[in-house]
Length: 385
Image 1: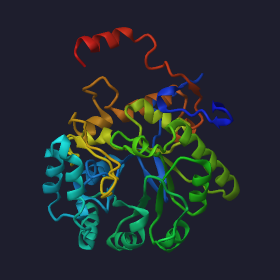
Image 2: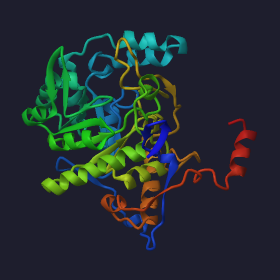
Image 3: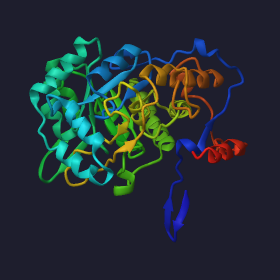
């Protein structure tokens, strides 16, 4: 604890850029590493989830990532369920000038969600060989959850900027995730949270997985607009501690997903070492040729008519989805060949599985990325980067 003022104490917290992983005394061949994880009894070969953002996941993208071993989450409150021809709306968002993007977002997301499209998109993913995983906000979960289950969705993610086991409002009935999980015929994952107590409530409510992260995403402005958030390394570790307590009491292990703030492959390894079982990626996957954003990326909270908490950022198109996940890397910034980076890091830390990687030694090392790299930085400046 540190004093931030007279009588005011604050806890020191850490982000990915401030920590590092220590190599183990005995290493493992990366080819022998198993990076699969399980949620709701289903095994996914890759611990990578595509974020439920309209710039990242549409039906073809969900099918493509499923075939590669990952999970893609389709946003049931996004463009795909508001428009018969979503490409036209996506083009409007991509072509809007910077000074008009907020108003264009509000116009695009004013179109109502259509129940028929909810079922159609899920069936399209399934018929294409993908795993239908979908998301909704807590406010729409009671309505869209049953529709999704009936259409064949396999897992439902109930997600908002901040979620708790029970949301109370004087203007309506409280939403209980415990009740929702009990009456929904498919498993429910929930997010997002960043604290021990909130996570413990979600674990106890019967969630199949808990997502961690408030505001760290590249296109998210929640931390700036609302001033709310916890750096990811600390947030994941706190939620992992809550999971351990829940497992001690119940014998039930619930996976954690680190959502946001991951910009390079090494940060996937750091997230898992802090306690995550998988990571949710937005901007990294928005760069894929298959992503519907066409080189642009914007946040999930953009449908909020009065307070857009996301912005459009330019990420470019750097390669195919396979390139980004499996390489060969065509850039040197760590944004491609993510799977091999994770396998190599796990091997260096002596971890054969995700669960073993969660026990890797973590140190505070804010200078790790810059130590001895003066020549690299001077070359980049000289190249105008």
